[in-house]
Length: 120
Ligand SMILES: [Zn+2]
Image (cartoon, rainbow, N blue to C red; front, side, top):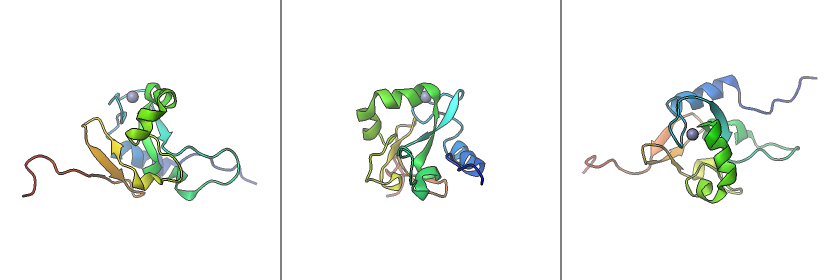
């Protein structure tokens, strides 16, 4: 029997990397990058199908990945972490450009505010 997969596929990793512009979503570092789960994988047992989909994942540097664990309040406020029963597609994420984005499972992020001067 094959070993159970516990992380995102290579395809999803590439999706997250390009969506987030190859830089950490918190500090914009372009090195030491890893994939962060917004909703933590549960301990043992069942795993929701969206756990390893791109809207639950962020490209972050290892420094910020540890920072999230040390600063849960700020991390939840900025959408870098999501608390069950909220779903990752329902919570906006703050990016280094200062805007909030909604992520979807197809690897797209949409700004939730109008840029200044756009529209009418
Ligand atoms: Zn960082």
